[in-house]
Amino acid sequence: MAGARWKKLQTYFGTQDMTVDSPLRVLIRFSTPLLIGNLAQQLYNTVDSIIVGKYVGDTALAAVGTSFPILNLMLVLFMGIATGASILSAQFFGARLRQDLSRLAGSTIFLTISSGVLMSIVGVLLTPVLIRMVNPPEAVAEGAIIYLQIVFAGMLGSAAYNILSGVLRGMGDSFYPLVFLVAASLLNIVLDLLFVRNFGMGVAGVAWATILAMFLSGALCFLRLIRLKQVVDINRETLRPDWKLIRKLCMLGLPAGVTSAIYSMSAIIVQNLTNAMGEVMIAASVAVMKVDGFAMMPNFTFGTAATTYVGQNLGAGKIDRIQSGTKSMLKLALAVSSVLVACILLFGRSLIGMFTDTDMVITLGDRGLKWLAFGYICFAVTQVLQGVMRGLGETVRPMWISIISTVILRMPLAYLLVRLTTSQDWPQGHPDSIFSSLLVSWVLGMAMTLFVYYTGKWRKRIGFIRERGKT
Image 1 (cartoon, one colour):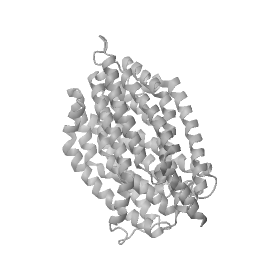
Image 2 (tube, one colour):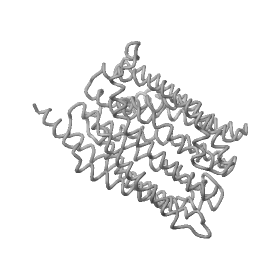
Image 3 (tube, rainbow, N blue to C red):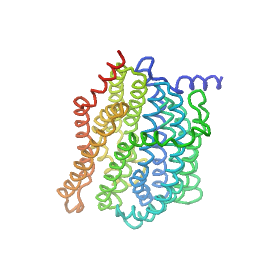
Image 4 (tube, rainbow, N blue to C red):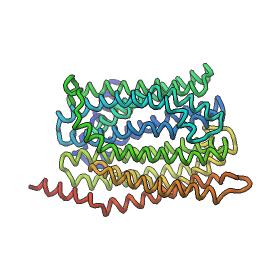
């Protein structure tokens, strides 16, 4: 009975051909395991924060939280490769180009190993410099350095999961990456408790738990890819790097990588403002960003689903399905985001209370969530429409939107509001200035995305492909 149910799940949620069936149905079928998987990935870092906050203290919580913007910055290479690989694999899969898909899979395995090793070396060496960039209190800095150097040493596991799961999702397989990530998340939780609560390893314990779990998820993605013999061929010939494909992959993925780097760099720069407000504000900000990570997951999920859906249908030349699928994904994303916003407004204090017992931290964190709540609806629109653009091969304009909203608008606004809100109680500026500046950047990002989507010259490409299909 259990075996039959598992096979049914595999059939329903396995590799998806998104060029047939109802657009809404295939999008839900693809998005459901992808969303659960993204939530499980967010659980990695959140469990780290909860456990160190509860068993070690607010200083340890601040140390782990201070590390995340820097860690995300170093992961942008993987994000760029994964985005390019996902777009190409979706287009090759939709066009039934098995040989090209096989060469792409082999090249991404090569890129996984080389980029993972490179990032491990660079990350370990640069950690002290990167931590000094955000200027945390000394006690926080010591814990952050320990955490980051251990995680960077195991970066190959993160490279394998992020990049190879991108290839699998491009082929419509969001089920197995979910299973692998849930297994890794469960291992991470068990090891966190064992290393921190039982062995008293502190921040180092959660770092070791994280990299061991990442290696598990990465290894399982690799095994899944080489076993997909009905779709792709992984052998000695296809494992040779195809430099022409790699160049195309990088050109598609570079803007996405730059976008991720921009978000990370802006977070590091704004982190300086947060750190100057003291450990209470750092801990509150960490807790808010953890809840924010879960609130953002549906938006990122629907953006990824839109890219895969559009890429497959573009490869198959089914342009009308792209337009109907975009409308369906927008409705779905807005509905889910609205429910999440309601939950945040109702249960904000309880959510922040999972990370700390300090009343001031809980109060500040709850205020931060209330500032950001409406922004999640705006971000849903941004992610879906930018996902559609990326699926069509347009990755540059979303990058520029991120640069304008994050670098040109958000960072100067945050510094200005901090300066304007200084007082005797808050000599380094009021915490509301950090959260309100982020909300403004999200709203403006959505406005720019809507403008580019409905007026951009790239939309002519759709008409060209439609006319070509008729001839």
